[in-house]
Length: 390
Figure 1: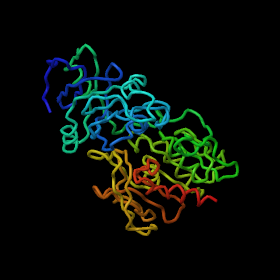
Figure 2: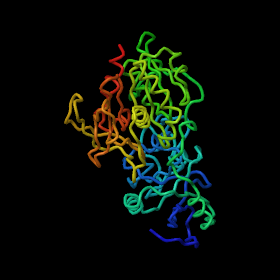
Figure 3: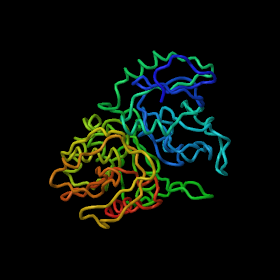
């Protein structure tokens, strides 16, 4: 980890500049330009295209801990949203030609087409260790083929960025209007099962705080038909669709900020007894709606290898699920009210990973059951939710 150095090394075409003044030079790829946000790390060995398009990564720069990112290329199926949302990525090794029969494009070409910056040649192990010790920093990632960087200006840009705490980003990534979703899961040789939802299936209204498409596919596969509404949808907007149940999606930013408009709606839904299932930011929204508090985590949880244990009176208590996570905020378990029970905890740090209400048909998890790292350890949650609506 180098200290501030305004001299650009020969051959350097990319740089990561942290608000602390640390400057890391490397080889830029993908789009040309610069972007400022929070620098985090992600421990999955693959799934980089899904990570880059996950709306929960809005305003973040991903450091991939696995050194060989890009080996399987990119394609039009392995995406979680229409656009890329992570600002860029930091990797150890240069992106090579893809070696996968599903590849349609090189990863670096895909990044360029999506306006996202890549930086190779970085000691990602050292950067990750720094984040673990010091927390997720603000930083600027930049790529210039000519290697021309104004380092002092980039440091000031990183310092001036306000950070994710207090920032509502759900409005920025949410759908602008309601729409129907009917596609099911992907299978080899067939792709995604189009229009799998049945007309007489239980109706789930999904509030989009920045949802991943595979969540919708899993809801359909579990037997639901789905209507998606924007993050700012009112109680009346949701109820107009006559839902049998309501899903609270994942998303980016500070849950307390998003909760300013989302929590009152969720409270009304709880009052009328609508079954609710939340994932990630949706989990945090449910927690806030019942009176719990959220907090900014030191480094966050991002990866596809997070062990979570079922606890309390939940079915299968004591079992461990291998989960995928992507969050920098969490619900404080010590602030849960008497009618909320912890159902899952992280075995990495003991943080709350799931809750349910004892007097209402509502539950949530902090992790991503649709991401299939187990690979199917957590799919029962979709079946549990949709099954209760029949």
